[in-house]
Image 1 (tube, rainbow, N blue to C red):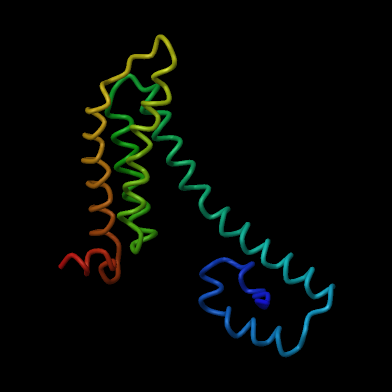
Image 2 (image 1 turned 90 degrees about the vertical axis):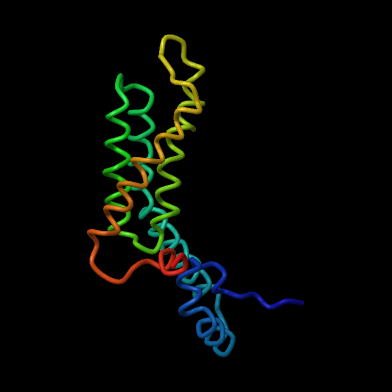
Length: 158
């Protein structure tokens, strides 16, 4: 029978740093039911705190999607893409490419969803690919403005 790894309850970043040591300590000392409750409660608290960190990104994604649907001109969602990609490239240099592509996806997804609402003018979906230009422009500016070493994705490409 496989032994329970208590570290599996924790987020991946925590497991990478403390997981093996934590499991060895728990195995040596044993776990009472009160300690098990404490371990579960602490793991849930860490998981929730990591989920809350994604809320600003989700908010930015929703703003870009909303602007894509309800703004009468393309400059508003394009400007939001430039600004949000710029900010996230500065804050999260290692994940700049993923964040930029996820932000870009707010444009086609919101277009597909709101095609169902009558009375709203929609551009053809092939035109949404143009949104990649401001998204990557903002990300590139963020990478150039951010201090520090280049992100790992850029090092791999060179």
